[in-house]
Image 1 (cartoon, one colour):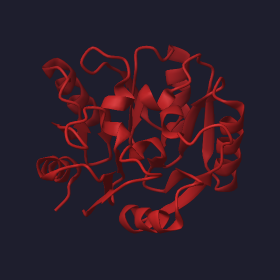
Image 2 (tube, rainbow, N blue to C red; image 1 turned 90 degrees about the horizontal axis):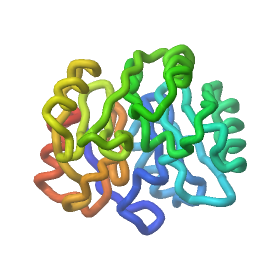
Image 3 (cartoon, rainbow, N blue to C red; image 1 turned 120 degrees about the horizontal axis):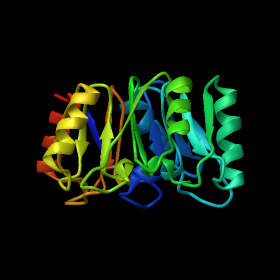
Image 4 (cartoon, one colour; image 1 turned 90 degrees about the vertical axis):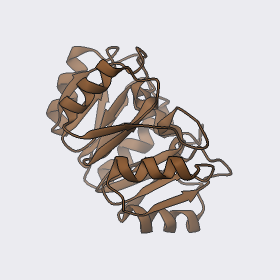
Length: 225
């Protein structure tokens, strides 16, 4: 599995503008075409542009897998409409959750079989996620923090988590997901993993400030060569 080091919209925080799965990736429509070609090449799947009027940042508000995405009913109206229309056009689901927390991408972590959610996510929302996206769901914290989607990125092969994770949390996460999860950082020491990392089972895209020792851990975590 190859790794690409890039910037997006002038930023190494590439994970704010892209959300990838094994079937598609969502990206902000202002990203340059040559960058989209790089994403296509390394993720080996097609992109779906999102065109919200009020923000360039999309990933903190959504999460999902090959079957679709989740988004809060209280998300920005224009973003919500864009997501629903774009997903419908591609035969994918948009699961709208009745939760006051709008940054669901920061509160949940998905692969194609499992989802980890913050304890802040209500039980009824967890059940809806499980039913609609075909995943087993469990709640956890990372470093006793609820914003687990900021601190952990996974695919179906492995994961990378912030060094703030506690031993008991790591043990639970690996046991539930049935994958190995490595501790590390991105972009020269940044612990908020999802801010600068985009992965699926086919490729790894990381912010261009990521250094050698971090790249080595990434290849270990996600099955790279």
